[in-house]
Length: 240
Image (cartoon, rainbow, N blue to C red; front, side):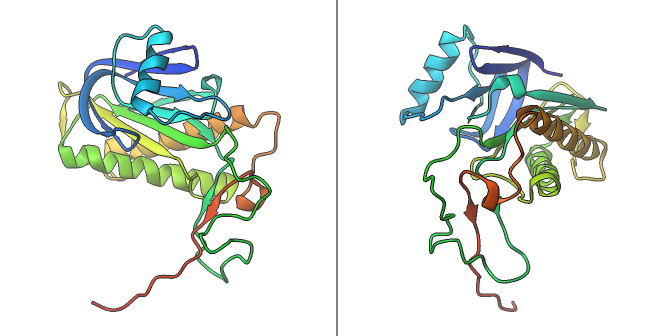
């Protein structure tokens, strides 16, 4: 589905006149010929993200503009997976996991803000799991939004199994579909599109993690990571 081009720390995923829905910076719904995944350097100081993205895309020689995600993971670790009517491209690094304890007492090492008490107070530049999931089908608006949820669920299940946390503090998903494709009303896990998305997200996130951590141990949770957060607060729950 995507034509992928990688250079100068930028990965362009192009397909003419595609509908996109991004959870990243300046996200939301859009229609464009391409989306981008941009690797930022260590100690990245930028605050004007519009100007930074424009500068990076221009310096990489890309004329198109579209949904853009930022990551500390090098684009050499980008991987793609295809199954049925779905393709997924992802970069995965887990130096900044976001844990959500379910059972037992909250961790005593987390401070009152939920931030892990570690020697480092800045994120390692290799964090973030960015997922681009696209289908050749034409999805109804609700189905395109649900595809984001399906991809995020599959990403969370994969990361829980591999590193003990459902995500990092900076994860994002971009979902895409072909407006000219066969119309599809639903994208849940039992549908052709939803099932294919789950399979692709699982396999591509694992592949990107294997690439990123080929020579280093993968952090298993906040205790082994450079940075992270633990949602150890408790809400007040009542009946309706």
